Image (tube, rainbow, N blue to C red):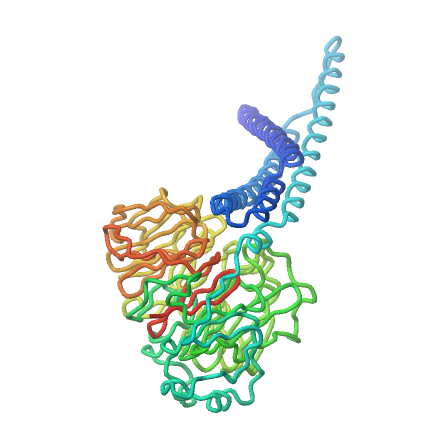
Length: 629
């Protein structure tokens, strides 16, 4: 009897706490809905009024910068509000569940209450009171859940980002000079080239090299100066092996964040100074037909990006010498592809994952699950649909390669998994189910001592896999939340980070162990980059920090005016990091902060730069830029 009484008391306390918690959350959700209906969470009306003022005075630089700053804050408020509503709804449902369970246990462990004489009326009164409290509480909870749904649904329909970006961006026109070749409006493959320029391939040769490919044209205004055009390389022979050598990979930029996705470029003589408005060191710029947040990849004299909207998905191959689109591949008629594209946020879109290439084929994946392999001439090799990613922001995990295996991180809502596909046929070579939540991070493929590992991060683990079999090597439970940043690796240590979680340094071993942690500066989008001694981390709110890679000691921190979605890249002993306004911040990869340059492309940008053959390739929100000295 004593144990039963104690058990009832415990569950009574649990029921009371859960009920009180549910009541508080319900009130907060209702208040949040009232505020949402009375106050615009993203200041749409205010921003539109400021835009109207800017239209009347387009040269007001301070007003333009003020609008950009307000837009950045409104985006943060928008996503924070969505997170609060979603989290509040989940907490409310959990507390109601605990309350119901507690009440059932109390009822099951209690006998019938016996009332005698005058106590009967008191019992009836208490019973009626409990009845009306239950009805009132139920009404409040139902109202809160309805308001939470209406708030979240209403927020998801608020258009932010793209339209404002278009209004703020200016067209950058580059003046024509006597010594330059200007390409405007329709740009054909055959280029007008001066006869006295010995290093420029003549138009007949260019036409011949493009034979049997779709005609290329663009409405972008491009500047190609005679002293900036590279000597045309001879057409590469057809590869004799199934996959490239390590040297071939390091000479190019075949994936998101370079070789293995680890944020390190092995190219040298990289420029540090350019200006998108004046044209300084801008070799060419190209307007990409369809928008996408994927970063450029480079192989030999070819640059690849993709774009998509609700109706179309396209892959573009651009000539590195001229900035002309050599071919466009229209991704369509893929078996299993959904008839309607999934809903995604403006900050992700339907073409967020970066492509990858092995110099034999180019591989692209889109937000609806379509995956395609295209040969270097623009012909489809194979295509398949991996299924709806079921991702509330949109799918953004980029593709990686190991030998002749295409690595695909597909941490979806219902069936998260890591896939290894044949590069030749698209056949699934292995598939590893994962007990994780949705992730927006991309895999890295790195050599860790005497073996190669795939390392990926998702809530709640950082894990390593064998690229040949998909078998898990190890996992460490150290991360949570909506994971966006990819891991980084250097000298036996893996670095993983996420906002509202922590930064963890994991020393690979048997077993692996966390050697230090930090929660002062955390990233929600940019991925870190590491050397043997240093770790560099950028945040979306504009802070950059440098740590000792082995101990976690903070060497320096630097605040910038604009935030970062682009990830820092290590190239030629320097860190290249582009902010959301398209300004590349370049500083030494050292334990003391030393700025080298701040070079703008002239438009907003959120992607990560690519490096190859002494050049930088940067994708802004509208154009692709080729930068070189």
